[in-house]
Each structure stands twice: as structure tokens, then as C-alpha cells.
Amino acid sequence: MYTPHTVTLIIAKDGEYNSVVLKGVFLDLNKRSNINKSGLADADAATLYIPFSISANKKYVSPKEYAGSADKSRIWTLFDGGDESGAECYFVKGIADAMSYRAAKERYDYCYHVTSVDLRDFGSARMQHWQVGGR
Image 1 (cartoon, rainbow, N blue to C red):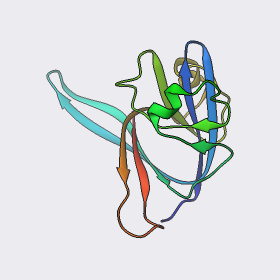
Image 2: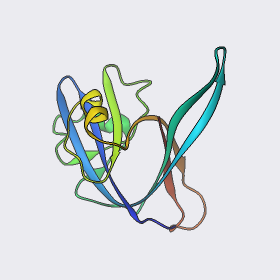
Image 3: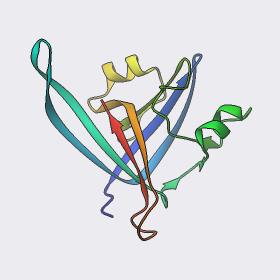
Image 4: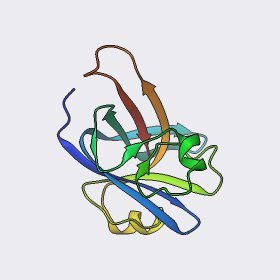
């Protein structure tokens, strides 16, 4: 898998921010046109591919394990926010400071709220990854 990018993943909940720098990912940025009731609307979109073998300064854990952990300073997870009450998960291209999603959108050019997390645990070990959608 081709992985030339670095992103910062940030989980924000109750005014606390947990960030992890992920080196060796593939970030595909594109513009899409969505058709809705009002017609065409442009929407920025991103797909982030994170290999299971990612180089990170923290350990990946499942969303449930993350939620149940008292000390989140050494772990990270991925979730789309649907089941996490009051929590946000977003990523920024490059190395970024931890802050609210709203503040990050104002400060950084490439900042995306996680909208989907798909587990791709098939094929060779080099191809196994998470496919993360962002908007």
C-alpha cells in the first residue's frame, strides 16, 4: 500500500482532546457534487487509508475499550461519532494541535470530521487497513 502522508487524528470529548500523529497513511482528497432536494452542492470529502501496521506513538484499541479506559493518554481509536455521545473524531493533514473540530476547521486547510470507519481485514498483511471517510 502506498502511504506517503502524515495526519493527526483527534478525539474530542467534554473539553478534553486526545491526539495521535499517524505517519505512513494514504489520504485521498477530492471534491464531490452531491445532489439533494435543493440541487447540486459541492462538498469536500476525504478518504483516509490507515494500514494496520501504522507507525504511531500510541497503541490502537477498539472504540469500546477506548471508551472504558480511564487513561487515554497512551491509546487511540477510530469511530464515526454515531454511537459516541458528545464525542468528535476528526483528522487533519499533517501535524496539528489538539483543539475542537470547529477551531481546527478555522485554523487548518485540510480538516475532516470522521463520517465512516470500515475495517478492511482481508488479503495480505500489507494490504489490511482501516478505510476512514471524512467530510
